[in-house]
Length: 456
Image (cartoon, rainbow, N blue to C red; front, side):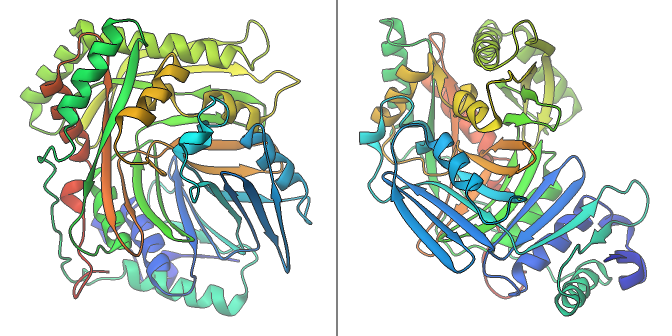
């Protein structure tokens, strides 16, 4: 079943054309109360709203819990968590499925001998096979098309009515945007950067990404924040979700890994950052500085080389190549040096193995990866949780996409927060790396909406 928004709403105002119209529709569905759990995923103009739970998989430090229809199994596991997930999904009652969810930063710990650093109650992964998938396809003119698939007709009608209200004039009431102050170095980020620079100088590792958390001191409207943030950002992927106790709205700048139906495996490292959105002259000057700064160029080159090695380890020999090298991509309040590395997945490898090898992203961990990860667990005062993990979608047909969980606002019933990091190398200075985290936080912090009257 499908219906155009135009038919339901009588036309879409010029300022609500995709992607903003699709963002508002998906956010309205999320806020409607029709579903307790959901995940919105935007990829290259195509939006999916996956909601309800047909099956669920939760991976903790010691167990994998699978709910499939009315049955539930909980078993202990060891080894590679990606293989544990792949085997659990292969055992679902239905042989045809698509999953949505996330893997947290701690998903990397078993592979790198760091499982003892993971909190006992941490979730390493949370995935669902949804009951409902609604799709808004790209539309270059007017308007977005909503495909309700095999959704129950009564429910589909309610959701289409929500979509109509989300895009129909007049404009929604003004929301209570509360920019978050990101300037306080409450956990001595500069000091931690200085310590990492010293460790690099003595040869412990070459690069590490250190992050800092910024708490949000008020209740947030996650759906309204998503709309405001998406309006201001041009992400590689965007997402909005509530799964279990965790909610999030994010505007990811890069992929960790993607494997398509033809078994092509891709990663897109971003490393090297300057501010963006400060005026044409300032942006152009920052771009030129980014492309010529030895520290940024070296940092990027190191990351690309590491990605080549990771892709080559799971690809058919001779197929790994850099298809795009050190271009500048604009992502919200920052611009980055970016490259694309791809290969053909080897016959003895599968998409979950690709995730295992490439996760966490080099650009969110460091080089070499294992000692950099150890430094992160040691130098950061709080567990990262989902930050610098990945939002995931995968299918029984062998497709998988993991987008890096950065530029995201996170929330539970108890707290809400932002987080950002910077790549530390031997040439780093604490003041500049702190400034870079502020620039990155600027992609989300100005658009946080406080829950209350006027929020949607």
